[in-house]
Length: 193
Image (cartoon, rainbow, N blue to C red; front, side, top):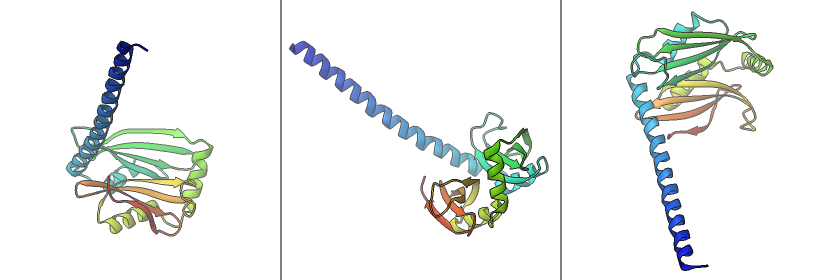
């Protein structure tokens, strides 16, 4: 192989490595930036998730299946974010967006459930720990402010097939905690993010 070709290959390799390392740094920076933006938006929100649930429940039927804070939703008014709430009746799913600054309902959609969603609804309805109780447990355990919660019916954790995954704002961090839907006990907590 000629020396010119070897130099070209080395230069190409060096450029590729530089690009790969730079991309990795940019990705890490972007993730940290988006978390800090979410934290700032959550801190600026004028209403909490529980208030948003109360507001949304007037527009929907059924049980709350999930609730989540979204800091960059296109339906948001200003920079405070939106709460996205999902309710289910066992046959119909309601998705409602509530502005985190004004408490105004921004959007309401409904659709018929598929087989998996109907099964999840039936299982959640029989759970000993309700989603509202799980939120209270998560807040008490972490001393944080609830930002989102979702019912999980899967085998991610062998000892906890039914649980609620909760995200909370604590200081300048978003933390995650899981609450077993049968026992109300917490597990697999992630206190940094």
